[in-house]
Image (cartoon, rainbow, N blue to C red; front, top):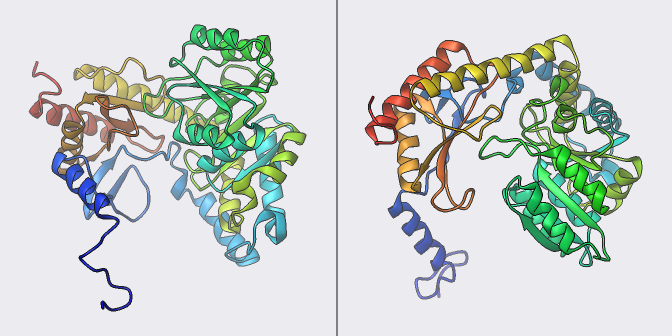
Length: 407
């Protein structure tokens, strides 16, 4: 008999995992985690190597901003390191309520609820507001958290072609007499191609067919709209979107997600959103950092940071296009460099890393098979010479792999 806690060689019910991993590694599509040593900055050290960082969602450079650091430290000193309970028992601190009120004001909404992540904000909200007798009409490239939330709701799910308003209306026409609730849901900015949803036209459809309208603004928060208020502000669709989801983990520089909407919607989510009900509250340090970030955004300095982000984005795209790269879909700081073959994309990323640029490869299941790519993300904190060097390196390595033909 084997020792307690050891595995015998006779029966391993997880053998299929080992086989799958071996297969992925043999194909060159099982990258190891890169380990960051130090702060998340435009140039930083991963795995002992200094690289230009084009991998981070830290759009405004706030992860290491002094105002956020100071707010976090003061919160720990005054309020401790943890909340000690879920929000619905003993874990709702005044700082949580203050943060929710601040975000609601920033987003021009009645109310807000903060979740532990953007993923749980999406999944928890969709599965709370809809049930098995309802209908979800979803863009085909929506984020995995939307897909999982839709599945958890047990509602009927119909998928329309990416950003295709006519296809969305076709589905709604086919379900014009549907008895249950109907939800149109879309990302505001799509995370893999960097394009922006046709929000005004989708709002028109929601109003025409009596649907709830929901937007996931994770990659638009801090990026689009005045001071980074998102796609609703960018398109001036205030009052037309019933549910706005955002993140605190990207441009805001900290951790978490949030949902904005009517006071009644938020009160309902307090009672029915399972991630909110069953997860311990944010630490005081996290909440305080988020408060500092929104205070910064809603100031002249915040406006300058957003403007710098867009200036850097335009500069980097121009330099990449000079070198032969094409990325027609991108309308934001997310820049996809399409490769197609997953193994080649991961090889491209590895060689880039060795040359001093970190731009991760993305393959299946994050994107469809045959559509692997590198995803580069620009930040407000990048300097022009860093972006120029990154563009040169991308072009040099791409040519060695026949991703770009030598001119």
